[in-house]
Image 1 (cartoon, rainbow, N blue to C red):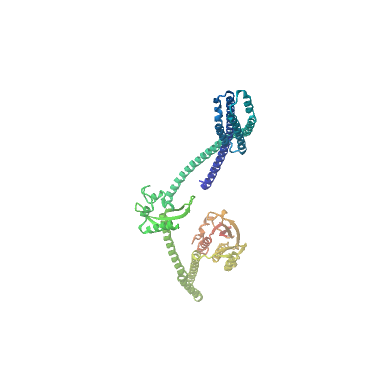
Image 2 (image 1 turned 90 degrees about the vertical axis):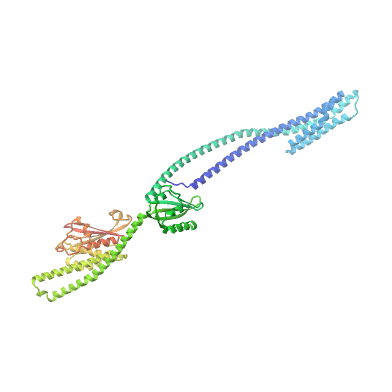
Length: 594
């Protein structure tokens, strides 16, 4: 199962959340600004209306005062003067209200101050008329004339009021335009926010739904992997554990119970409880290993014994590793493995190795005996035979001469047999020192070694140029010598042997199953002759030690030569085989790695 980088996913989701929140906040701020602007425009409109209403009331106070004074002058009824007496206070209160309404505008404040001054002049003018001595009825025309003299003041008041109203009317028009604009923009802003919110909610739902499906799939895969993991633990006889440094908590997998021969959840899996199952002589190893891992964060491979619940002693191996998880927490993960079977196999192999070493020592002793204790008496016998032949052979009777010749042949075969055994032993056990060597030189040395037999048989050797390889020189020379010797020995009577040596590089993939590394390349070297050949069914048997196809009387030999060739080829990680057709000839092929 592919493991996703949850850090990257978390960063992406956090980024999406931040962008979404920012977008929502931005949209909300725009909407708030629109609403605030709408509210401000409404306040401005309301403000203009309030100023207009207050100015109307202010004028009504002045008009009421004038009407009262006129009524008093006409009727001499003092009840008409009541509006006049309260006019000053009403004007003052109205002025304060207007002042508060237009305080933000210096121009309107100046206009209002001028209006207040004119109104005060008008009220003072009315008061001056009332403070004069009461006139006679017949002189009422004079009073009317005095009243009309204040007309200019009234006109100035009206002009100033109109000026203030004109300013407010202009503000009202602007406020209405702004209000209309805000009324148009506000629904659009709300619409955009709703659309974005719906889009965001739909995308979020799709994403959450997708994540839930992915989570369900991941949980299912985790469940499958858990079952596979537990099954694998049981098959492999292992138990996993992990230690959390921050929490100082050690946790074991459930297979710990199986390894200790207990039922699942039979005990609480802690280090202390586990050590109770450890062999008393090995408990210090487990304690020290865990202590070193916890304090120094250094893990090591431990081998110790465990006594299962059923009393069986098992061999355990513990390995660990320090890691840091995706949250930056330090963990030590490890594994207990029941290696009892492996331990027993290793012990068996060690015993076999000891037996092999003992056999090698015995073989070395045999080689020493063969090279000294056996050859020395044989050489003495051959010396005596040689002296008898020189001095007394002619005096022997015919039968004795035949017996004596038989003794000579037997001792010669014995000498050859011992030498071949020594060669076989040497090929099998001698130190393998590889050198980069020209095979043409080794072939020439073999031809020189067999020169007498080559001349006797009039043998013809045709050889291609051979490669330079990393080989054990004396062994490959022995290989050439044995193969050439075989071709000369098993030649047809009265037919000069023709031996052809060819070489070419081949790929391992085209070779039979003995190749361990298909990427390797090999040199295929074949030695073909025109000899008597042999039955192909014996193609493998001829490389067996002491195996002979012919009787001792027909062809000399010990059956060791080709066995030596096989050992030499195997020493070089190579291979040798034979191909033959009876009466036509044989081909011996060996492969040496490049």
